[in-house]
Image (tube, rainbow, N blue to C red; front, side, top):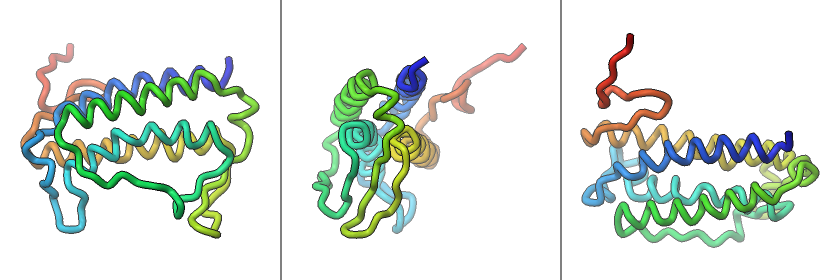
Length: 168
């Protein structure tokens, strides 16, 4: 089996879970934050929606320099914008994964910050770290934000405490 097949399966499965979480973001609370050092709800949700772009950044280039990257820091206008952004980034990520070869996934990718190499690793590891694990980490943060706002948290790998379930 080609490596991209397994990565695609996981991405598509987890994207459905992520979309459930993003759909619960209340548009009237986008500027809320649980602590002064925390991101706002809107900034966190937008970051999660953008994270699939790392698939393209990793698979379509051999390096990325954070110091020269252009970041869109505009807050989202609402939940629909966040969901639309996620769908756009996800579709591009799927296309990038569908077209990648094992040879490319085994090649080295370098993450720079200016002149400093932050890390270098095979692209298959970079995809897991920078795209997938990064997304899961922030999705977990989002679930805490939702809980603190008394928004029902959707289940990810079974029902959540907010979903009725009968186990036999």
